[in-house]
Image (cartoon, rainbow, N blue to C red; front, side):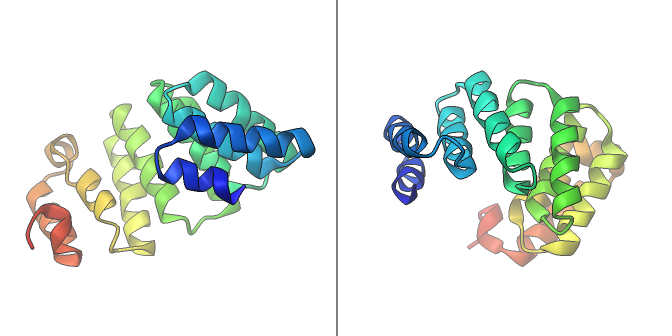
Length: 169
C-alpha cells in the first residue's frame, strides 16, 4: 500500500489505482486500500467513483476520520456542500482536534455563504494549529473579509506565522 500512496504523492494516480487494486484482490476488506483508491480517483477528477471507494472504506471502518474528511473534500469538489459538512462533522466527532478538517468545514460553509459559522471553524482550526497558512488565507479571503472585516489583518497574522506563505521571504 505504501507504493500506492507514493504514486499519489508523485501524481501518478493510475499507477496508484493499480497498486490499491492489487491489495484489494488479496484483501477486499482493506479500508486503507479503498480510501487510497478513492484519493487516487479524486486526483483524476473521477469524483463519483472516489465517493464509492470512500463509502466502501467507511463501511469497513466508520471510525476513520481522515476518510470522512477526504469524502467531504470530494463532495465539495462536486458543489455538494451540505453533504460535505455532514462528512466533516462525522470526522470531527471522531477527532475534534483535527485542524485540517475544521478548516475544510470552514471552506464548505463559506461556499454556502454561512460566513459566521465558517469563521468559527477557522478560529477553531487556528486554535489547534496556528501555523496552518492555508487556514489563515481562507479566513482572510476577500469574501470572508467583506463579511467579517479585518481581512488584511488576518492575512498579515497568517504571514507572521509563516512568511513564505504569503510571498514574503
